[in-house]
Length: 312
Image 1 (cartoon, helix red, strand yellow):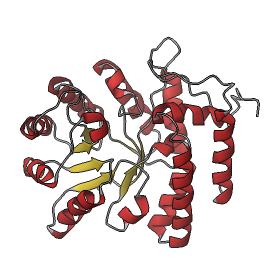
Image 2: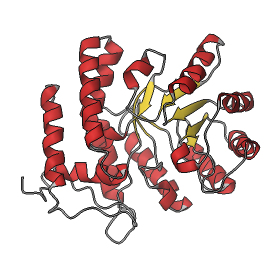
Image 3: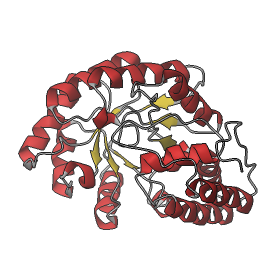
């Protein structure tokens, strides 16, 4: 079973739009050093839909190099593409590199029938010998999973579901059905929102965007959760929900870059058309203050880098 705190890590680009390998690996390493258990590569945060297939494979390889420095840490690449051929190729390459599983959003942009989406996942499952997770993210894929759909995919060998919308009726039914009927099927939530109540429902892993810029908070929250320290876990959960809401003022990828800069780290650039606000924007200082306050509330050490573009 995949367990712990996973990050849908951003991919860092250079000003000319190319992948910044050094900064991307620095960021991966920094997150592992601060307790992140695994990387969910080239998803929405990681600019997967903005990258070529070869670029995504390169990110998988860069991540493998970093993960090898940290025994027990794992990779869960997102391989979903608009077409089946590219998706299957990414899944096969990820398997060669050495990952615990792959996840895939349904084919996006076009409106597809359930039968087409089932066939898409069938081809991924049959192409690799590692677990395959479906990624329920209707906001980006224009497809919403139903309980019946999950059952169809389970019969084909689907290993689990990463769920982002957190429709409690749907996700609780999927989770409890797997437990009651002894199915080898895992639910991973694709957000830190809902972590604590869903943990008591049996969920053991979360893919949290906050890990990109405040992995210390997520690490502490999961540590207290797994230890059974309910009062501290609840306190951390409330702090996490508050600071997470404050960072949802723009696209999450842009916010992650901004939060890293606010902490004094050189986070490079997102890929265009995404653009960062100028460093003169007062939002950077506001983010810095909000994160520092969150750390103080939880008695966590707030460390910063030396790339101070904000003069704070």
